[in-house]
Figure 1 (tube, rainbow, N blue to C red):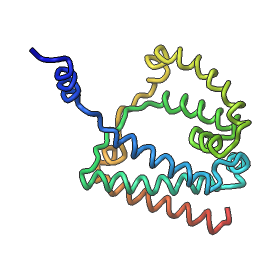
Figure 2 (cartoon, rainbow, N blue to C red):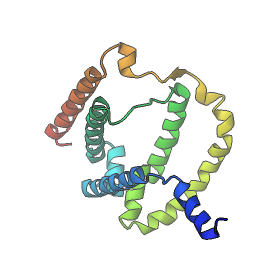
Figure 3 (cartoon, rainbow, N blue to C red):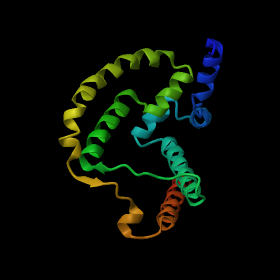
Length: 194
């Protein structure tokens, strides 16, 4: 007959341990990204508003640099077999509605989701109180989402198409073209003093 201690020990060893390393990597990259956003000035309200008014392109330069690094890094990791990509399907309705919600929120608050978290972490205490009630404004969308996802959000569905599949080329062709275009835009912004 087994004792309760031996049964407890057996039950503890049979439970598989969860791998928390992806969470730790996510936390580490999030801290680094937040630090770089703060150092680049993207957590300052005036910089964000300057971008919206098209007279300070700091945010655009930061985001284009992040896209460039992510574009090359993700596809390099995919080529090495470290990651697999699973593109999600999308539609014109999703992009239009999502863009409107994001754009209005960005214009009204002067922050996007990443920069607002960085600004609160940077000590913008008043901002935390000001934006707390804004999360309640998403409840109507959240409650309507099941109906919207069967209707307007699915208008213009184009599936999980990617540029390499669309143009029937190797994905590195698109990566190199996109990276070159980003570098040209960044160079032009610097030369123009923007």
